[in-house]
Amino acid sequence: MSHKKHHSKLGNTEAIAMQLHDSLEAKGYCGFFDVDNLEEISKRELEESVRQSCVVLVTLTDETCDSEWCCFEWDIAKSNGIPVKGVVDIGNFPKRSVIEKVSATNAHVLQYQLAEYTEKSRKRLIQDLQTWMDKRLSDIDKGVACTFDRVHD
Image (cartoon, rainbow, N blue to C red; front, side, top):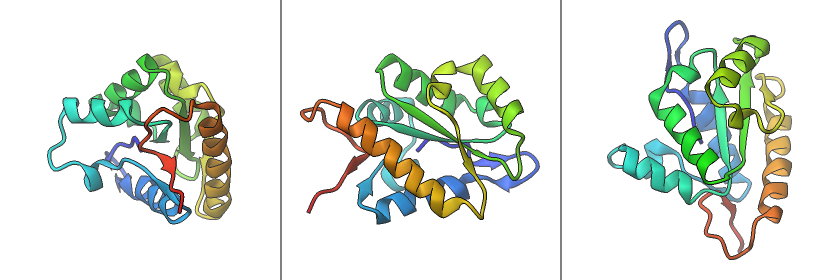
C-alpha cells in the first residue's frame, strides 16, 4: 500500500490507505503497510517489500507525486513488472489534475484505470479492488512469493 501520510491542506491523508488495507485484510488478504511492517523505514526495506509484492495499491492526492518515498516505491514496482492500481479520493481531489501529475511522474501508476474513492462508495471500491487483485494474482505464476496475496485456510 503506497501512500503519502500528510497533505499540506488536509493534514493526515494516510487514513484512506489504512482503511483500504484493513478492509482488504478483513477479506482475507495480507499486505505490506509501512507502519505495520517496518520498525525502521529505509529504502532498502521498502525496496525489498515492494519487490516481494504481487500488486501495489496507491492512494493518490494532488501531492502524492511530491513524495520521494512513493516515487521510489513506484519505480521499484515498474522495474519489477509489478501491477499498480491507483485510488483517487475524488471528494477532495480532481481526478484530472491527479492524472496529469502522475502521468508526468510515473505513468506505470496509470497502467490500470484509476479507482475512485468516496465515503459513499468505499464498500463497492473494496469489492472492485478485490476483483482487480484476484485477476492479477491469477495471472501470476503460482511459484512467486507475494506479500499481498490471498490467505488460504
